[in-house]
Length: 358
Image 1 (cartoon, one colour):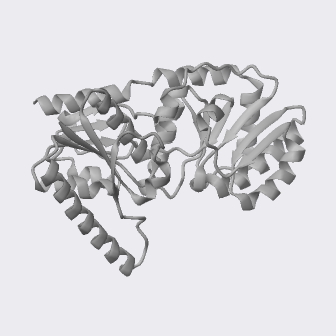
Image 2 (cartoon, rainbow, N blue to C red):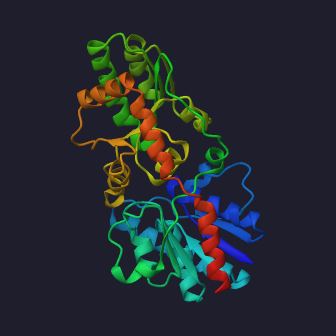
Image 3 (cartoon, rainbow, N blue to C red):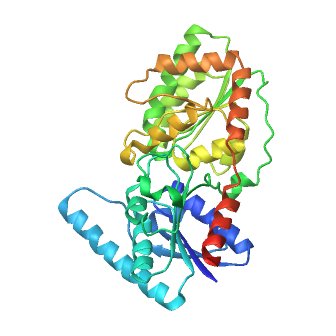
């Protein structure tokens, strides 16, 4: 029985789609993945799902660019219609973002059932567009806002599946080391801002409490390394800089605290690992959804967050010092995070089977 999972653009849409596809594959379903060219670098080398790549790219400003994107969407939709006519899937599962639009529209045109998953705490535009037609709507956050009242009967709380590299980790950590280990990660959405605010905060810490020993691992673009090295040589016990870390799961486990953005996949990984974090939502994310994600965790006392527009390096320094001085706060956060974890892949796969059997 053929099932398509659709997610692209960012890891937040792609990783949950892959996780569900692999769970369905393990249950002997013929699951295939639909994504776009932006996610080619994210695809695991050992991916066992047949993958269809849509040539969409990023949405850019300007009339010509938007017209070009419309043509790309039409072409991608036509491609999906031809694929679905040929293979006639039992279900199409969309994980949000405009990459899912062509497949969901094709499914609707051909009267193929669809299911939706929303990883963020703000119901996205594409999911909202197809919500009435969907058989089920799975939410990562029970607090998800702006969902029409008439859709409540379709909703399940599924959480957000994590990628295989994370799911294979056995969670075992403590926060009793002599040094305070910080991981700073944010990819292209965080590198520039974090490469400014974090060194400023560490300089303040060094002035206020020079006896505090910090081991720092930071994701930063190569052009920022020289400046950061100059500062960290004076303010850190040890430090490591890289543009990309291939062993991110282990980097998580080797840290006491993470400073990061608040994308849905990042939040899912923090929950799974029980990883204490200071969240700084990316302020230019669609509908400011990362702020809603961050608030969903902090409202449960499962994280700390600052808004980029209003925070200062002194604010960040003060919080880091508080956590370094009282590690029991990290243990409490770990416990709160682990209490939020649910077996998302299984819940989603069970829901898929329920739809197919009905």
